Each structure stands twice: as structure tokens, then as C-alpha cells.
Image (cartoon, rainbow, N blue to C red; front, top):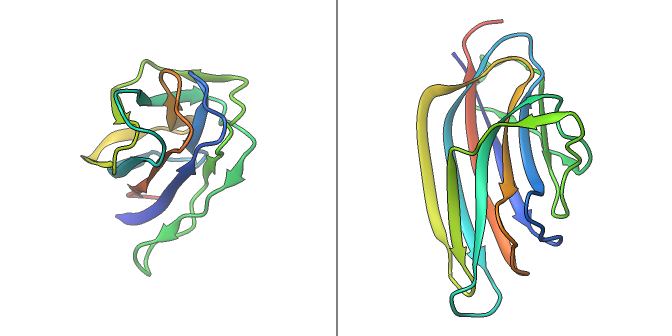
Length: 159
């Protein structure tokens, strides 16, 4: 098994429902497996009951474009270089040609909160075949000062 990890680091600027801010897209010739997804939502603005929602979903066809490429780290010396397109943008990625499946979870954030921590342990059961990806998008209007930080651990077992 070859193991990898990459960061999620979003301090949102453009706050629009349906905007994709992060994607990890499999451009490798083989399946990759999402093992763990660790996230922390935070808000530095305001107080009260305004809430922001992040949706996490599978994407297909074409990887989102734009934003900043995110590099992954190999978690052991045996891991080989793989083809994964990882992108983030505080203002949103371009999703022309990307098909997004219905989201499988939402993360809620109340304004002025110190943050919430979410950990998803997929144990390799979230499979991304070539041409599939994981995306994080706004599901509802976001509030200035919202952020999302964390990491994705993923693996592949053959080349």
C-alpha cells in the first residue's frame, strides 16, 4: 500500500452557494482510496445564528481548473509518485465539464464560533476511479471570515 496526505487550507473570500473551493481529482491510471478526511471549520466574524454549510461530494469527468495546485506528501519512503490533481481557491474553482454527484455530508458552521472538528474515517472504502474526485463546495451562502482547514489521507495499492 502506498500512502499520501495533502492539506486543505481555505480562508474564503468569495462566498457563493454552489462554489467549489477544493478538489482532489484522480488523474492516475488506477484507483485511489480516500482513507481519512480531517476538517476544522472556523469563523472569525460576528456572532449569532447565521450559519454556513460546506458540502462534500464525489465529482466525475473533468477535474476543476484554476486556483492553486496543492502538493501531496508521501507518507513513507516506498510510496511512488502518482497523478492526482489537487486544487484549492479562496474565491472558487472553475468546474466546466465537471459533474458533481449529490453530496454525502454537510458541515455546518455558525458565525463567531471557535470551530468544529470533523473526522471521517473511510478506511479506504471511498474509491476514486480514474476521472473521479472529491470536492468541497458551499451549500448555502457563506459568511465573510469562514474558513476550512484540515487534511486528506489517501492511498493506492498498485501501479
